[in-house]
Length: 593
Ligand code: ADP
Image 1 (cartoon, rainbow, N blue to C red):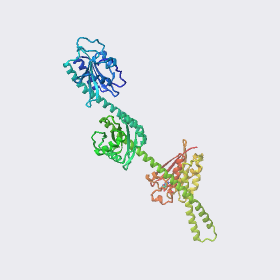
Image 2 (image 1 turned 135 degrees about the horizontal axis):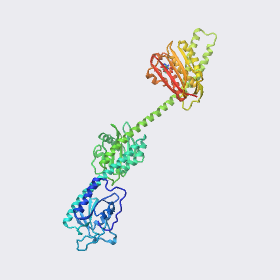
Image 3 (image 1 turned 90 degrees about the horizontal axis):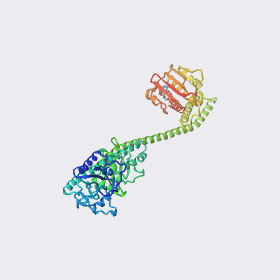
Image 4 (image 1 turned 180 degrees about the vertical axis):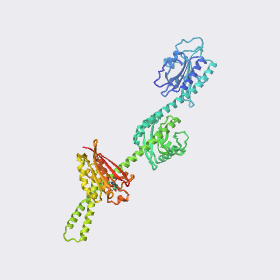
């Protein structure tokens, strides 16, 4: 470790993040200084940027502070090694071989005067270093030493000791780098998982993919990714690439991927497909070769295949790719990827449920619009001919010479036609009050007068059934905000139902009161009442109770549907209390004027 120093201070990255590795390397460096007779020893590791970074230094305080964390380009060391003597694991470059005019320098130059007493005297520019290689012969670090205590180049015995330290340093550097790499992977994959989890709050799959692809690609140091989702009935759903564009997978690959994803999900495992790596379940060798052949057509070398699912259900797969020359996929990455498979799986299920529900709502709305249009059209088309029928009936009924049978028939026909008119009017009103494009034109309405009119109208049938119809109205006008005709229909329908569904001799009470900024209209009867199930369905068009007592009364099931819609479009609230056999109470809250 001699000569002029081109080393640079390190960047922001902490030297070895793993404390145990740091201690092990420090111990080896100290062994070289304390036991092998050198003033200073430094262990460096090769970083991704092609520089050697010193990570453990022992000995001379001044050299330590100068060397700590410095980075030196690897190629400079390699240049020096070309000229070195081979001392086993050690390489020695005597200063005589150096050509200072060519700017050949490496490492740190101690500020000492060489002792000039013979060929084995140590010179400040001498270099003694053990390059540390991995099994593949790749340079991963170095152990360098300087300032021999005896001022001499090491002899045989000292070289043997140093070789043992070099051996230890080689192993320790590999372990340290591996641990660091592992910690790094876990950290990055966890960061990716956090971002993916945030992205999974989205309800559209496209958004989930768009929001998480960068985190996945960066966190896994992948070249790209795609997600394949399966439609619920099996087969291909969608394939989203990292950029959200469609990925073209042939039908063979789609089938292989889907089957593999299901099996991988059952096994709770990811799969790795890479050249030279044995294929394991869920991918057999034949399928593996097909996949590799496809990958080579898109310039990709290897992939990590992750099943996506939730509970027992596998809903798709995520593929992360690496280019030729990229790293190998590791177990730490595989484990983190499987967790992400769970997060994304749940998100896909959520997105799918949301999409289905959304679709269902759209369809129901379309159906509702269609139904309303149909009702309005049919009612409208019936109204004119019916008016003409009624007109002719009236004319015939006024003929002077009708027999008793004929006039009886005509009267029955007229009653039938009047009933049809009522149904048609209800249908037309239902479609009007259910039309969002036809809002309420509101003005103050005196509900006391509305109730009086209704009582006048229903009074006759109440008297016929000897029903005690009572009204409780305050003396002041009770003003609500709304459409007078619609509020009239609302009160009319509720009071006529109360009379209709109350047996002879029963009682009905209609009341009005003001409560803060609301008007409360109440219609209470001692009628046949309803089951809780029937109450739950009230207001659905054409709903009639299955109670025979209710069915004995004429009706269409439109009255309460109209009431419900009128209350709704007035921004009001309808409360219903009922007990089978004991009567019902309908309460309507409306905005006071
Ligand atoms: P209709 O009276 O024409 O059948 P409605 O929409 O007014 O239609 O009422 C729906 C159903 O609700 C009725 O068929 C009846 O079974 C039940 N119902 C409504 N009002 C009362 C009430 N006051 N007491 C008991 N049942 C009622």
